[in-house]
Image (cartoon, rainbow, N blue to C red; front, side):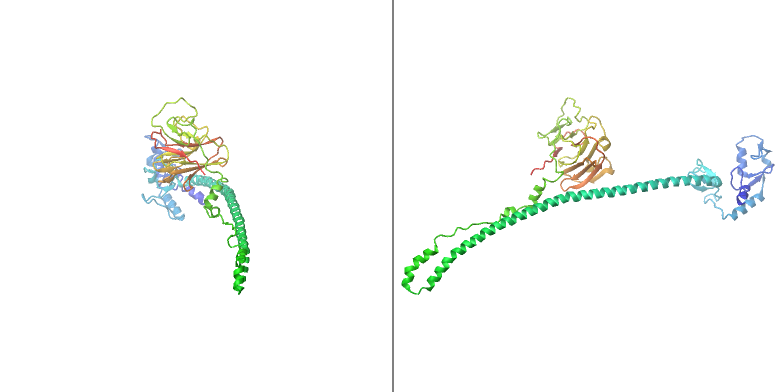
Length: 459
């Protein structure tokens, strides 16, 4: 019933409560503003009709309906206090769909809302409710999907963490077993050598004890002789029996302190290198891939810029745009590690690249183009993207960089090789051969002092 009454008290044009209701000659009621605006759209026509029954009318036939206005006001009061605009002091009868707020008719004509979609509350209610429900349902689905995805990532992370923990335990367990075996072997050697030395010293003691017996006997005999002539007559034989002029030959054994009290930890570390994997690989540079602006050392372990550029015949394997070079050694499986001395270079790029990278055009040195790199630029160290977001070590004075490639995991990690501090890791998927990549600095090299040198571990 309330809905029917509300409809009777609503303007057929704006579908909202009457504002300043007027009655036409035909008896139909409209908001004064609504009917006048409707007729204004007809231009200078002298004939006007009722929007409902089409009966002719005129402006002079428009009469204010105060009774209807009072009934509308009373009905509104029954529904609670009306909301008014704080700026124009008019009732909030419209809804702006662009700004999602209730406004008055005066607001709808302002610059802020003039080009916006503004409907009466009754019309806006259904559309706003429906669109809001759709938006919230869509967002809820997105969040639930994201929640499920995060749940999967949690499971994947926990699984990966367990795998990594097993790997850590396995690798350190191998080192522990090696150290324990080394410890047991060294202690066994120490015990064996100790037994030998002690046995020889005990043999010396027995030999000495045997030599003491005749001496003790002769000493006892001499002390017991009271007859002077007898002592003088037998003294020679008594002393000869003691064999005082021939000393027993004693062995002089001792523990080898060099084996058991030397640099034990360093010795074990050097022996441990035989089981460490991956250990620093002794890489060499590939001269066929080197840019013509680079010069390699005779042993192919160092690269620097030429002081004078030279022209060379075209080589498809050669980097012709960037001043880069690859290592001869490439990888299609396993885990590999190498180190590069970068201390003398003010700017450099090191990392890994796939075999099929574009060597002749100005492509970005990023993972999508087959480069996984770390770079020093203006004193800061960056990851693959030369942006502040990828800046990982600002103002870090690096002397030596370590690079580790795990082919199966698609992982390229970078370290400060002096203390093995982790700098950055790129994760991707490798599908072809991967080569170590070196670039003394991004543009054409022109200074002899700028160089990169491969580190070879010497034992």
